[in-house]
Length: 61
Image (tube, rainbow, N blue to C red; front, top):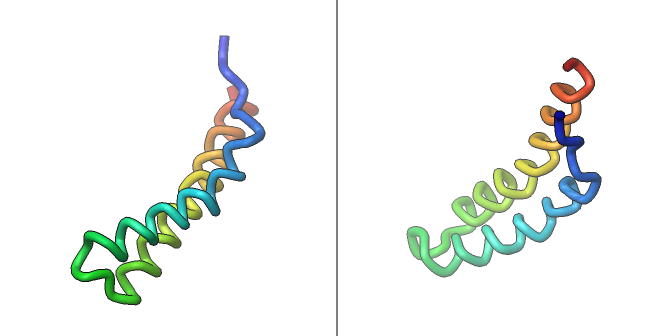
């Protein structure tokens, strides 16, 4: 039995972006602006992209 992707998964994006930005600002390379921005964008869009991939694979199978 395949699990459906949870509908709340894309809503984690902003929370993860804020957390990753805060961690990057505190610990990575002194928290330069570009490091914080890249970390926030990658971690913010990861749940959204993951949800879309999971949904596509779920409907395909």
